[in-house]
Image (cartoon, rainbow, N blue to C red; front, side, top):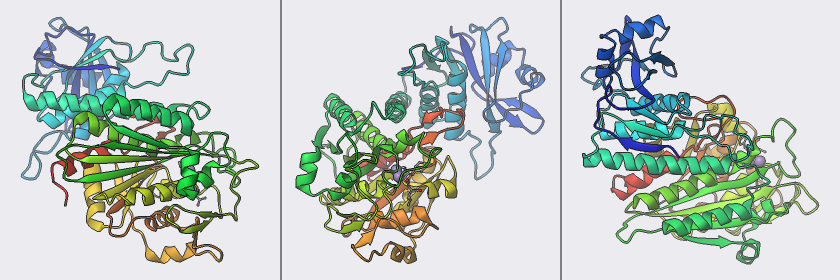
Length: 507
Ligand code: BES
Ligand code: MN
Ligand code: ZN
C-alpha cells in the first residue's frame, strides 16, 4: 500500500514528483489555500491567477496540473479544489472541514497514480486534519487489480504521500497519522473482500480469511460450521445457506482489553452472493450482488482496527455468512424456519434473506448483554430508493443512540440519515402459519426490515441498524477518495463509536 510520511520540509524544498496544494472558491475567483504559501511564492504570488487562466474555480473534485516554476523541487504542482472558502465568523473557525480535506487528498492520490512520491501541502490546522488528509490519500490511492493478468491501470498506485504542515515530532500529529494508516488499511481490506468475486469468496473462504487475520492481530476467532449451526439451532442462517454448495458460517471475533469497562457487539450481513434464491432476482439486479457481504466486511475491518488501535473497550464482531442460491435443496417461499431465538418465521420471499441471517446473529450476540449492538447490512433496495447511493440509513430502538450514531457518522465524513421504526408497519409481517413472516408492506420496505430485526434484539439491549445498501458499492465512477466498487462504508463510523465508547463519551 501507499506509504504515509510526515515531513518538516517546506513545500518548495521537498524532493517529490508533485506537490499538492489546495485551491478554494473565492468571491472573485480561485484562492490558494493555506499550506501552499511557498509554492505560491515560487509563482511570484500568481498561482491563483495561473490556475484561473487554466480554468480552475476551486470547486470540489477539481484537479489542475501546472508545471512547476524554478524554485520548486517538484516538477509538477497539482491544485485540488476545496469548495467555498470557509467562513470566519463567531460560529465558524475559518478552517476547512475534515471531510473536505479527506476528499481533496483522495482526488490528488487518484490523479497521481504512478507517481513515486507526492508532497501534500494542504491546509492543516489540527491533528484531526492530519488524520483526514492521511486517510484521504491512502483511500484514494486504492486499486483492486487482483484479478487482472494485465493491470488495467499500468501506472500502479501512488508510492508515498508525504504530508507537509504536520509536525512529525508532535505526539498528536504522529498518532493521527498512525490512526489514518490503520483505518485506511482496514477500509481497503474490506474493499478487497467486497470486490472479490463470489466464486472465490464464499462463507468458508471468508471465515478462513477472518481466522488468519484474527491470529495476526490477537483477536479470538470462533467459527461455527454447518454442523455447529445445526446443533445450535440457527435456523435463519441455515435456511438461507441451505441452497448453496458452499455451506454457511457464523464467525465470532472477540477483541478484549484488560481495562475495558464497556462492550460493543457489531453484527454484519455476510451474504457472499445474493441471487435472491428461489425468489430469483431478474437479470439487471444480480450482477453486483457480490457486494451483499459488505456489512460483514465492515464489521470484520472495524474489529481488526479496534484491536490494532488497542482501544480500551471490548468489541465482538459477528459475521453471518451464507450464499443465497436457488437449488433443489434451497428454502422455498412458504417454508417456515425455526430461528435461533425460538421464533418461527414463514419465508414468503427468499430474497429477503439478510434479515434471516442477521436475526440469528443478533439473538446470539444479545446473550452476552453488550452495552450496545450495531448491525451493518446491505439490507434493502428500499433504502437506496429513499436515500440514494451515498447515504446510509440509521434505525435504532433508542433515540439517543440513533442520534449519537448520526453525529459520529457526520464527524467521520460518512453521509447518513436517521430513519424511524413505525410500529404500524409491524402487522404487515403477521403470518397465518408462523410467528411472523420475513416480508411485510412494500412501502417503507427498509423500515419493515428494521422492525423485523428489532424482534430479535435481547430485552433491554440498546441496538442500532445501519442499512448501507446504497453506499456500500459504487457502481458509478470514482469520486473523492471513493473508488468504483467496494467502498468500505460504515467502517469509520464503527471505529469512531468504539473510540468514543472507550473514552467513556457515550452513556
Ligand atoms: N441484498 C438485497 C438488498 C440490496 C439491494 C442491496 C440493492 C444492495 C443493492 C436484499 O437481500 C434484498 O434482496 N432485499 C429485497 C427485500 C424484499 C424482497 C422484501 C429488496 O430490497 O428488494
Ligand atoms: Mn436478497
Ligand atoms: Zn441480500
